[in-house]
Image (cartoon, rainbow, N blue to C red; front, top):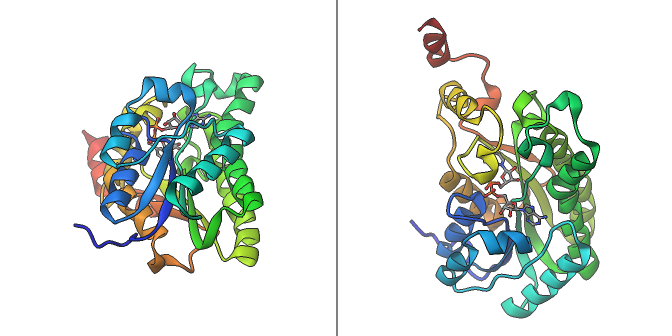
Length: 270
Ligand code: NAI
């Protein structure tokens, strides 16, 4: 089902680790829709993951970059523009990691060095990507930049730990930088708040399997999967969504508007 929605567009996709990654699906959909792009991930992820297989399938290159390192990001933008023979039209920031969540540190006894890492990797990196591209003037007019978020930015999910603060900050950066990008460069910045999705990052959250099922039963359309998230991202990179900016867009099968569903009532009665 290709509509060549992204024909002629050039992008950078962060965060494809393996074929479960949301970014992996986004790359496949963007390729299918006619875009060209570079792939990037942290050097350690390049050793552990399978990103080279994806690069081969998408006929592109992988440029290593730790998204917390501004020098790496400058190099990434410069090399991408060079490889793609032009400035960038879309960027996907699909990056998240919390040492506290990974090491099962309870929210009431967070390790603050790890907390800072969580914020740096999962939120400030979005600002660093945006600021680097802004200074290098690396993006074309009407470019579209997306970060991936989760509803724990608005509501409390205990197992999500300090990632809740990271996602709130991520969404706030999209609004704050969205102003400057809009007014100076006619570029849009948004976050997509995605349903729980079975990936390496997702499955690291404690109780993930239970709240995955709960969200599926509460949402009238069920959980949105990674493929449909990728299709939504492609739509947001396209010229059909030009006037959407500074938004946090729920891609969650209706979850965020629900209080109770018949399926949950039935489940509780069992
Ligand atoms: P994933 O584990 O496949 O992707 C996370 C990526 O972040 C990995 O590729 C990892 O290498 C990369 N990363 C970590 N540290 C980095 C660094 N310093 N520099 C560059 N890259 C780095 O998992 P998933 O689920 O595809 O995650 C993508 C995004 O989607 C994350 O922002 C996540 O929080 C968000 N999200 C995930 C949901 C889920 O249930 N899986 C739900 C809502 C949002």
